Amino acid sequence: MDIITYLSAILIGIILGLIGGGGSILTVPFFVYFLGINPITATAYSLFVVGTSALFGAISNYKRGLVNIRTTITFSIPAIIAVYITRKYILPNIPEELYQINNFYITKDTFIMIMFAIIMLLAAFSMIRNKHDFKKSYDNKKYNYLLISIEGIIVGFITGIVGAGGGFIIIPALVILAKLPIKEAIGTSLAIISLKSLLGFTGDIQETEINWYFLLLFTFFSVIGIFIGVFINKRINSEKMKKIFGYIVLFAGIYILLNEFF
Image 1 (tube, helix red, strand yellow):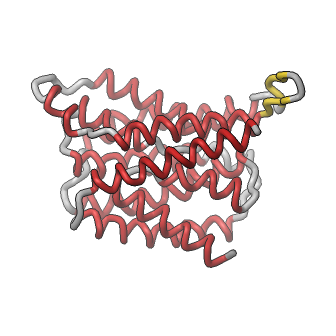
Image 2 (cartoon, rainbow, N blue to C red):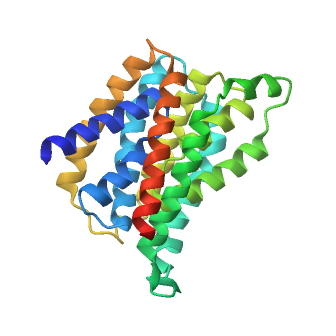
């Protein structure tokens, strides 16, 4: 069990380093379905694991000149505020039982996992599609501070609810709105994910019982993985890997929906 757990942590880090997102797409389902951690705690753990791992990846990419500071600040400030408010005030006030359909109860935990599955399906669609076509259409447009900030708020809210870093949304936004090359978009995405995830996690410290020994050890292995991912990213076409991972996420999202409803 321990070997599989920490190998999974390394894999999560590799994916983050390789494609600039997707780590939480694996982290939350792994914590919930494999380790039996409740979704609220799992999303909190995901914020810390993915945020810390992304921070190391961002530092590595910054040294290579692949982090755009202006975009990181423009995107991160509204995202951080949205994540913190969601984790600190909105999520704790969601009722434990939301809705009943015949004998099927939609609880708070069920709602979070259904939301997460929907996010996974959107992520899969985003990763499977080719992003290079978007950039060509937006090359002549000005840097759009407003839209980037709005995107930050939306991603921050999503991150707060389901614990997902939102790299699959961030990267297309950086390519289209900030006109960044794909490699720079990946590095900048890691910087944004690290800031909003770690600061958003602070909203959970008093509300959630945290097993720090497990969380720090899991994060340690995830950080090892992100260095491996960044190393691989230098040598292969990350877009091809993203498409492959997209199909994996697609099937995982379908599995979660079937598991929650049936």
